[in-house]
Length: 198
Ligand SMILES: Cc1cn([C@H]2C[C@H](O)[C@@H](COP(=O)(O)OP(=O)(O)O[C@H]3O[C@@H](C)C(=O)[C@@H](O)[C@H]3O)O2)c(=O)[nH]c1=O
Image (tube, rainbow, N blue to C red; front, side, top):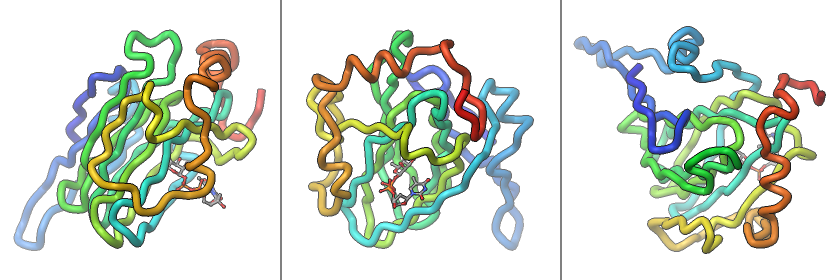
């Protein structure tokens, strides 16, 4: 795998190192040792798939608060998406900055999202499927979100939004939620342990 750190510390674009032959190619998509060597937490609690019927569909911006904060390793296995992540680590010098990466079935690119980031994506082609490994179990009580069109985040999406969940329409604006987000995203108070609320 080829690891390239983005402008946000700890967030990596991961490209395949293809071994080509007459049949096509072979490539590793995950390796505990390689991830750990790049300082990335290699835990996998769940692997999820999401299918999106329509171009323009938007999912996000989602996160789980510590101690259930998740890492995510996101890829697009059919079609194409624009994936955006926002740094919500209050101590980070890139707090509230974002990065956008196009993930497609053809480019086989993956994005590693560290804990305490908001994550979302817009679907660029009909019938697009995403697949992602998550480092922590799904805990609805720890779930949080921000609006995809929050002016403080300044995210640009390439297409008009066609479909979005009812939940995603009503996430608070950062203006209302920042105090809680900053407080609950603080580093070091409580560790993350898979499945256990400490
Ligand atoms: C995320 C998730 C959802 N669910 C359930 C809740 C609900 O009934 C249904 C659909 O959930 P959602 O509407 O939250 O699905 P979705 O909007 O696709 O949520 C996902 O969005 C992207 C952007 C992410 O970053 C993911 O971590 C996740 O939050 O599936 C689970 O059972 N396990 C899970 O891990």
